[in-house]
Image (cartoon, rainbow, N blue to C red; front, side, top):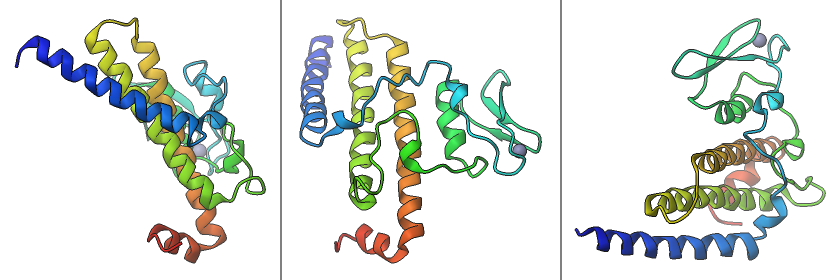
Length: 189
Ligand SMILES: [Zn+2]
């Protein structure tokens, strides 16, 4: 395939992704979830304490990946600190906090929004960041923007924060009414 054709295909993909992102942002209300949170700015301040010893772990880099180490155990995370933090909070090692106080997003309380409805919104929120990441990578390929790696890393970290939030909302729904969640998942509600 010629280079020119390849460029045209990427441009078309960008158009489609832009359309989807715009739809999620406006029609699905994703903009209401966004704040000025920066997952790359001193990420370790958001680490939660260990649910066994109560210590906030240290993040150690072993040359390949980050490892969370507290008084009682170690837990392998990822290559990036900004991704390792929500990964740790999401893991069975950390304490759990009410989902509506998880940083990174502006999240309605259960009184403000039914958790089952919120769960569907969070899936869209995650999709939004996945699409934004895809878009940034395609734009970088085309080299006609100044899209930098820092921007891509920020979007990747936001995706993991959204996954963490998604898991916590699911856990809350299950603990409140396990049967409802199963019925909901099978699409009968
Ligand atoms: Zn511990």
